[in-house]
Image (cartoon, rainbow, N blue to C red; front, side, top):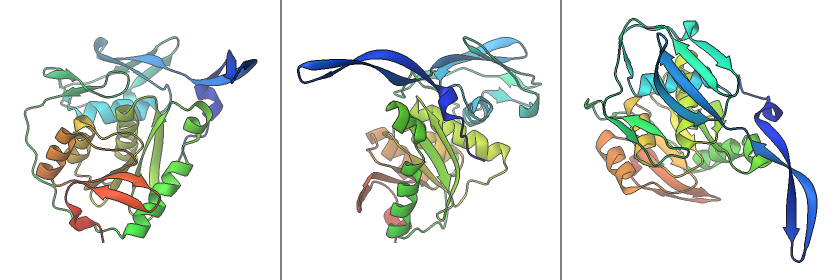
Amino acid sequence: MFYNGYMEQVKKRRICKHTDDSFLQTEDSLALEKKIRISVNGNEVLSLYCSPHMVRELVVGLIMTERIIRGNWCAERMSIEYGDEVAVNIPAEGEVSTEGKTITSGCGGGVTFDTGEHDEPIKDGLAVERERLRNIYREFQSRSALYRITGCMHSAALSDGKSILCFAEDIGRHNAVDKVIGYAILEHIPFPGKIMLASGRISSEISSKCARWGIPMLVTRTAPTTLAVEIAEKRGVTIVGFMRGNRFNVYSHPERIR
């Protein structure tokens, strides 16, 4: 199921549009940005800024990827209250760990946590033909409705190499990825053999998120950072960058591209 309530995520504002030596009073569509406060058993543990849709998916993706709750908790019991801010409360029986918090290079000040755990490298037999990969990415870009409306959104999607299984947009690159991961978890979509599609640069936190869930391929229209490639090389993730038209670059594990 894909999110279609686009106009609920934008706000109209009067602006002055300048062209050469003239200007025009007109309206423009701005993307909504809200603060989300995440609490566990009523105690706030984390806050971040995001686009206020697919909030449940965002929280599930973030909490589970960063392993913030160590123990039993249920996403169905999560409460979400919308207002000037978005308040999320998660009933949980486990311990909460926010040690090792790092403010990342993500849009809006992303947060990631160093858990000190070292997962095994991904051994995945995924193989994708070049033309099919190009076609999937073109379809991905065609779905970015909020970007076309506002010009300031990032998007992410999960594909099985044949079609797009889930799609999300957000003001933050990392938030969009967390929403896709959260959606897949809630809908019981397995990660092996899948491709993460992203619209922005690939930095270390996004490369790590894919590695933690065993997603063997990560594709973007821009570039990865050095640390993102180092993580991908070590963890067995194929990074594809500069996916534009008929060309792209492969930065790690090129054996998955036919």
